[in-house]
Image (tube, rainbow, N blue to C red; front, side, top):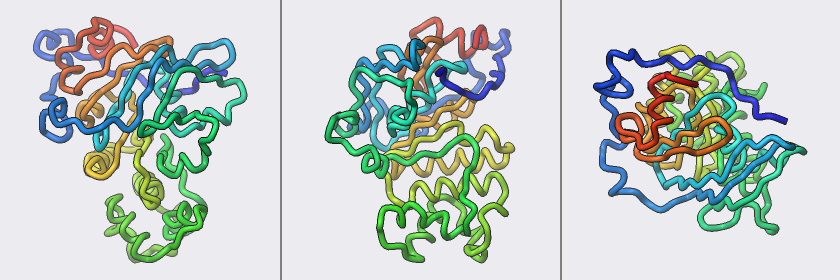
Length: 288
């Protein structure tokens, strides 16, 4: 089985502007500070991580640390292993019969694939938001409460309202909580899915192309929300949109064909002064 990622064309940078900057924008970290100096502890650690789907290698010897309360963007061409890396973190690849995983992947120092680790319990700490909004055919209220009920936790109006407020959706839906979530717009549905994910207070929030199916206005709202959520959660976002990665992330990891992680650094460094020529070639549209 090969990794399935959406085909999306990357806009190349005008060659006349390449000497000024790899992407024509002022890139700063999402926090506006020197993240390399203020960096907290690592939450997720990958060491020599290899993933195969049958005979096809999807990730190759990945070494990557994900730090607390930062937004880490994962970029690279289609089929390079971005989504596979996310699926490893919440153990969704357990559901793929042909998948095999070698190396180490740790969550707060604990081997995520250890014999005594319960994947269901692990996923309570790691929320997931997918490319296309996937609200359940239930009310807005019941969508937010779903994870809490599955975990046997108490559901209160205050918890539901707080999740919707943190997902920047409360003001738009507070008078229609018991109507179908399917009546919401695409952007609202995606923010509802974010509210559903954060209602159970995970440590890590995984986002796989969360705005690729949305219009520019809805995309802007999702990006603003992601930056706000980083004050509470560790966010890992896969995106084909390099400008988006530059706008919202503190660190950027660049995967290339064959599942190789070729460079990871503060976002400003990746986009303005990468060490690896292949990263510069990818960002400037010479391939990918």
